[in-house]
Image (cartoon, rainbow, N blue to C red; front, side):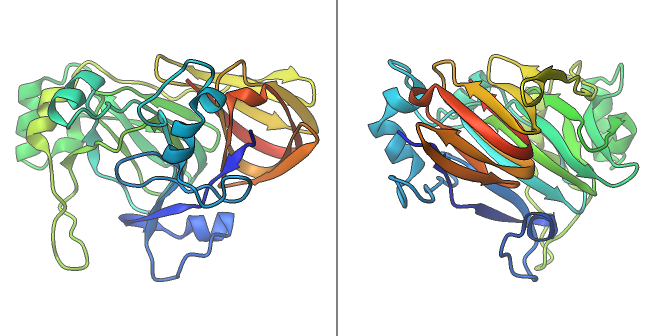
Length: 318
């Protein structure tokens, strides 16, 4: 069983920029406002296709169903691959939004899962900010009033961020990505977003984007807010590691590879997303290259593998 890389999936967005082309070298036409790169997905919207190796050209869901024991671990089953990983280029600010939890999504969104996510800040312009919840004491009634009066910014909790920061966003938390930020987003396999406020923007045809205020008000937890996490690294052989998120949905560690780092899957699949530099993944006398902007899926059956190079990796698993 080999590690798998995937063909990039690009999503045009009204707020997108050109960082995916300029920073990572992707072949994207100059006139395209691409806001999202989906590096691994088994979502209803888009399914990743394996790029190279023994499963070249096959869809992730097909391979995962056929070889679930090898990929997930013996006896572990998922209806769909449980993570969705994106790189988000926010040239302009994103809408103010909220995601439902599993229970609400299952009931109201055709059995879908909810969406809890984490953000790793790859780059940010000076003074860039994220919305991470609501200001202390904001009530539902006040929130609705400010929304109707188009003054919602007055109740939003903002956090200034810089490259290397991490933010954990639970379902039910009002949030937004500000302009001038490049983010790697690791999340539950869901693309459910309830837009609350979009600054009255219009697309090239003069149309406003759809809002989902009614559903949003049903799922917002008015007490939820968060601050950024500044990773604390510890030395390991060949590099450094910081365990930044440990949750019921996924665990994420940042690994700085300075020479060679040996890792173990622990009987679970691992995803490795390179956010800086490049490395070679070695296993069983074989190897696969990983460069910034790419994700590799390491099946549980591989167990030990070696990262050789100079790079920064986000390792995720359930």
